[in-house]
Image (cartoon, one colour):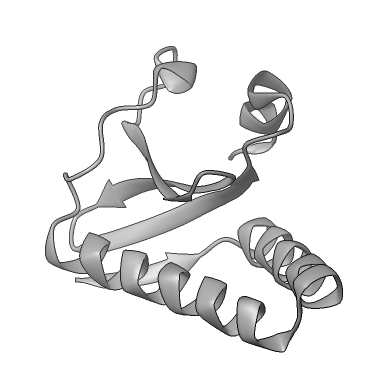
Length: 103
């Protein structure tokens, strides 16, 4: 399987990574990005590992979300042999508002 990141998800990931670097240092950012990479690799091997996300029940496609840590999660859908990462969320923000931005 392969992964494709939506541009909005990439932008959100960069924002969070930059915040971590400014607030906690370069090493904390590296550890965070390593966790994101490990999660992405896990999804490639087992795309159905995460539960269906109830925020997307009204959509035709099945969306799932998996936590990176207590404050961040990836939202994705599987299309054939491609894992489409459509959102990278800060869990401290309103989930309904974030779900509306997912295409």
